Image (cartoon, rainbow, N blue to C red; front, side, top):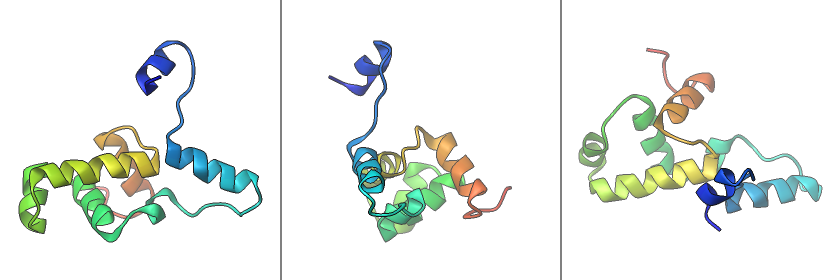
Length: 102
């Protein structure tokens, strides 16, 4: 069942990565670090650039990547952190002090 169908039907959706992190906490493996600690260095850099309001094409050019690769990194960032969209990435980064507030 897709995440959208599950939520639309009144249920809840938890990504596989979040489910594994929760299982780790419940099994006594200790609390996980911050969500961005799970990101690769490239994903982290893309997250910061997204939070700064950079367009995917600009990020791709500055990192010598294709726009499609930037999109893949963005999808991984959302999956690994549990954030829902670009605005949430920006808010999260500001709240954590990873980027300036403007």
